[in-house]
Each structure stands twice: as structure tokens, then as C-alpha cells.
Image (cartoon, rainbow, N blue to C red; front, side, top):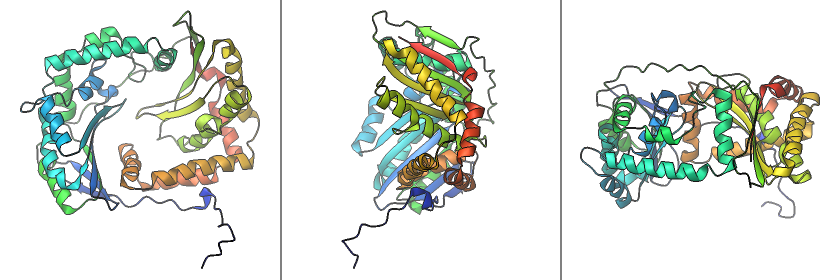
Length: 426
């Protein structure tokens, strides 16, 4: 019997072992890949169809997101209402999302209903028609949402920081305008859909209570169709950052708050410094106990929250700091942000503070390794970036063993003030 008079030992997260459960792969006759992971005891499933159909691939601004948004708006045999009813009847959920590099169709359902739902998903992925009336409604709603959002200083700041770093014509720097929304046509959507959804190879990720029955069903519907498209040419873009590093925008003359964005183009996951930078970024502003939060929120009281984000894309990345402060403290807030970056360049972090950050990172990772719907996104990220399980293990080793000296060296390499763009919107 355990001795209840004594508290159990507390172990740091850095002492734990971290392992991804093995992922299975089936290659179907048509070349389609299915990655699957069986875990959990509930008879539920999650399936993702991932296609290279993001903003990077679009031939015209706004087309990728509009295609994703209208994918469920009708097919040659089903209306939008019939599609929605098909999933609601079985208590399932179908979501379509699009980011800078990928488009994803995600299905969540009970295992017993999968064979009823796969024909509908197949129909959407192969026979969508993008009705003109649905496109007009999408444009009206998108324009109304844009007009409302443009009144908010944080929204404008998020638009501008990407544009000044990459250039407004670069996929990672584009943002919606009235003109770009109005210019989208039905032919634009159909052309993009045919080349990137209907005939393009997909990565399929299946997790949950998986058996041979589900694998066979997915092969029946998605493993035999001839894929007509050839390998897509990868678009190439030249990054054209704004010649001016500092931008002050008055969005609301009567505004009392300013949105601050400080950012720079950055490395992606393929770079060997990416994993060490996760630790440094967390230390600077990646969690509630970070230096930026302790200084600018807790000590100075300038803001409710301030964060530093390290966002990787397929072809590049971005590192930026974001916060909203009172208009009268914009200048001192900026000064303190740069002071914290400079301090990391000039002084080594203490062993205790670094251990706290390591435990935070690895403790969060423990939660991400619990359950099939958390595990599969880890595997999916590895596969889409061309990595194996060895890369995951290397990252864990970095999080556990990185030293104060290595942290300081990284800060000196990447926290160079002149490399950062600064956008303030009031």
C-alpha cells in the first residue's frame, strides 16, 4: 500500500521519454497514400485529405481560400443543403480549411457511419460545381466581414506586417481587398479545383478506432480512381520586403489603443536552428511566464497580453511579436520589447529559467501525445515536411539539452534589431 502521509515524487518533464507510436502506410493502386494510426477505445474516426492547394499555389489572389470555402456548396448531383444534411443526419462533421501551403478536408464521424459518408466526400472532391449564386453570396459576406475587420487596428496590423516583410504580391504577404474579392470568378474556382483537388494526388490521414474494414472502404473510394494530373510545377516567388522598416498607420483618429507588430522573415522547419529557436522563442514571448509577458504586462502594466510567435511555412517562415497597448505607451512598449531581445543577446539565461521553459515545452508535448486525434497531427506535420520519426526524436533531444550558451548564440544571430520590421496601427 502506498504511504498516503508522503507526497509522491515530482518529476520534471525533461526526464520523461517521448515516443511517437508507429504509423502505418498503405499505398493504393492509383498511387494515393493512406497513413493510419489505430489508438483509443471509442469507435470514432478522423480523416484528413490534404492537398497542395494553398495560397502559394493559387494563380490569382483569393482563389485558394474561396475554393476551400465553397467546396461544399454543391456538386453535379447534390446541392449544398443535401451535402450538409448528409453529414448532420449521421452526427458527423466535415470541415474544409486552407492555409498558405495546403488545403485540408477533415471528416469526424462514428466508425459505423463511415461507408455512408465516404461517397459524399468523394463527390465533393471530384464533382464540385461552385454555383454562381453561392459565389456571389460568398463575395458579399467576405466583403462585409472585411469592412468590419478593417475598423480594428489589430486586424490591419496583421495584414501590414506580412505585406511589409514579404511584399504584398508574395503569397505569404497577400491580404484580401475589395478588388481581389470582387475579381474572383466561377471559372477561377473551377480551374483551380480541377488542377489541385479533383485530379491531384492527396495525402490521406486516418486515425481513431481503425480496422481493415475502414482501410478497405477508403481504398474503394479513393484508391482506384485514375489521377489525371501530372506533377504540379512549384510556383516561384521573389520576396520583396518594404524598403522602410518602420510603419505608423492611423486607422482610427479617435482610437485609444495601438496594435504593435514587430517581425522578420524567418527559417522554416528544414533549418537546423528551427528546433533550438522554439526554446528561445518560448523564453522570449511564447508562454504566459515569458520575459515579454513578465516585463510588459506584469511589471509595466502596458498590455493584457504580449506574445512572440515562430510560424513556419513550407518555403519560409516568419517570427513576430504582437501586442495591443494604450496609445500613450506605444513608444515605451517598443523600447521594452527591443530591450528584452537585447538582454538575451548580452546575458546568458539562468539554468533555472531555462529548465522552466524546457518543462513547459515538454509538458505541453505530453498532452499532444495523448489520444489519436492529437497524435496524428504530429505525424502529419512530419510527413508533409518530408521528415521521419528521427526528426521528432532530434527535436526532443534539442529541447532537453540546449544550453544557456547556445541560447545566447541564437539570440545574437536572430535578434538583430535592424532585421525587424515594425508596424504600429492606431
